[in-house]
Each structure stands twice: as C-alpha cells, then as structure tokens.
Amino acid sequence: MPGKFAIQGDRIRVFGTFVPRELSAWFAVSKVPLRVVGQSGWPDSGTPGHENVYWVDLQVPADYVTSGESVVGRHGTTGRSAVMIDALKVLKRPRVKSWRIIGDPVVHILSDYRGEPATRIEIDMLDFDPDLAREQFIGRLLDFAACAGDEPEPGYDVVVTPSRLTFDVTFRRPYAGRTCPIVLFPYGGRSSFPTRRASMNAGSVRLPALASYTIDNTSDLLRYTTASGKRLQAGASKGLVPCQLASIGSAGTFPTGVVLEGGDLTFQLRNGLLAEQCTFTTTPALEVRDGWLVADVVWQFTRSPVCGAQEYGQQQPSHQLVTSLSDERFLIPVTFDAWCRVNEADPARNGYLYEARLARVELVGPPGQTWQNAFK
Image (cartoon, rainbow, N blue to C red; front, side):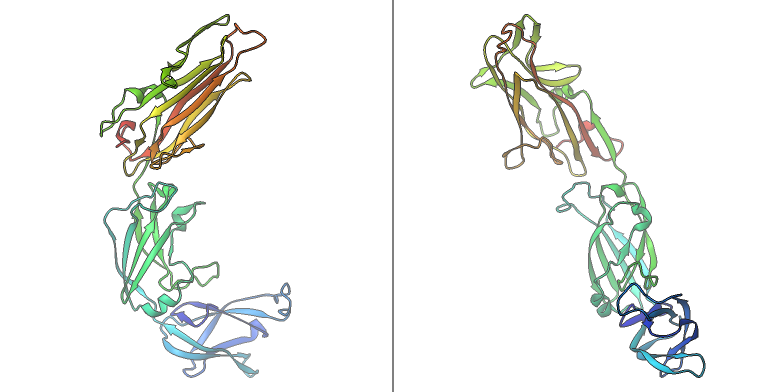
C-alpha cells in the first residue's frame, strides 16, 4: 500500500512473511535504500491465512524519482532477498503554485443541496501528473476536517487540467462563519492509512456568517408588506359565509375565528348548541430571498374530545395540500378544516376549544438584518 505509485517522501506499507526488525529494502536497479520507519510487533493473527504476515512502513527518499522499479527486501546483511514490489513508480512531490477563490465564498443553507451556487476554488500546481490524478479519484482530494467538527464534510465537483485543479465546493450551513484550512491531496487517496499521501496546505477559506431571527409576535405578519407588495392574510369561513365570530354559553363569552391573542395569530373555534365547522386559511405564500431560510414554523394546537381539525399546508409552487406546515423557501399557506360537535352532556357549556396558534417563525439569513428583510 498505497499501490502502483508513491510520492517523494511518502511512506509505503509492505505486508509479507518476514521478520520486520531484520528487514532492509532498496530499489533493485539504482540500489537506493528505503528506510524502515515503522513495523508491526506481531502478526495479523485475527485474519485467516495471515497468521504469519507482518508489515513494515518504508520511507521513499525525498529526492528520488523513478518511472518504475522493483523493490527488493532482505533479512539482515547476508540473508535471503526477494522482490517485494514488482514495479513502484515514484513521482516528484507536487507543489501548490497559487490558489484563488473565484467570487465570494458562499454557504449552502438549504437541506436540498441543488440549485444554489458553490464556492469555486482554483489551485495551480507544479510537478503534477493530471492523468495519474484522474485515475486516483476513488478518494477525496480536499480535507476540511480542521473546521468540520462532527459535521459531514462538504461535497464538491472537481475538474482536472494539466496544471490546475478546480473545485466547486458546497459548504453546508454548519460551516457558516468558520475559517476552513484547505488541505489538498492532489492524487487522492486520503484515508486513515498513515501515508496521507502528498497532503499539503493550499490556503484557507473564510465563510460568511449566518444569523437567526425569530418572529415571536406572529400577528406582526398580518401588518407587514413584503418588498413585492405581498401581505399575509388570515381568513375564517364556512363555505361562502363567515363562520362563528364569537362563542356565548355557560362557560363564558369568547372571541372565535381569527383571533389576535398575546401577540400571536390564532384560529379558534368552540362548541355550542349546534355543531360548528370552520375553515381557517392563510394566504399568500411568502417566499424568502436568496441567502435566507425558513428554519421552522411553529404551530401549537389545542384539541379536545369535542373539537378537532384536519390541518394542511400548501406546498409551493404546486399548491398541493400536504401534512407538513413548513417549507425552507416559503412561509406556506395553511388550511385547517376545524369542527366542534355538540357537548351532549351539557350542550350550553361552551368549554371545549380548537385552537391553532402560530407561536413563532424562525428564519436564518445574513447577519445585521431584520426579519422583514427576509421576504421577497
């Protein structure tokens, strides 16, 4: 390991039936030695057929290049010798000539990683074999572990030209505000194996920060007009006529329908002497600007054995009714088909309630703004 080629200064690992402490190794033609820099203390007894197999790590000289040469090993100075590697190619250690970020770094904040611009990073290389690099793309070429923490690493697409690597990197929301070192593996092969082949620091990217905004007084949405002239409206109807506007009974007198209560938009319906029905709606959909996200829409529901509802959101842009009440790009319209049956035990007591309360809306966007800047 790692296989058909190595880079100047790399480690390679050789497995076989030898005594590690007695082994010496060299290139067969040039007689250039490979220094033993690591070894197993016991055989791999946990793998069937490997009971007598040991390994050694060999250091490739930092100033040696070969287009392909066998590696020979020998026990001691006079012991038996054998070819351990049929043909090992040693490449010059590639170098970063320059690097740049094209445009501004961006953070992809939506869960759907398609359709948003990526951060383009160009790295110009010296002593670089692009054809061999293309063959080795089974491993990742960039490592952002230094700023990743427990987060999944960014995804990227890469284009290889004779002297340049171009990466379109999708940095996800947890990376916002971080400075991420760019560790490059120009020939791939990044793994837990200790070689970490030809890794180098190419630079670092400072990603823009994000901020959270919470609309706690959701009734403010009814008084707000977006930049495009849209304004959220709330309705309560029973077919073509308004539904119950107030509830009067032995439990008291209560407002019903669209009720602004405690700073929140609420929909309320109570039981009475007759069965009650009401369809509560909001309209239209309010779309957030690029770089913004509707992180959460919190509806709180009060139901009872006598009062309940079927609750739907209106998916955008299809307008299809769905059970989800939140969408990352839109504050979506809702439709709540509410009902209250007669309380047979005490018909006059209007103590049962259906309530849908828009408790808060959570947004994510650029820092230094207000929630009113979020919507198109």
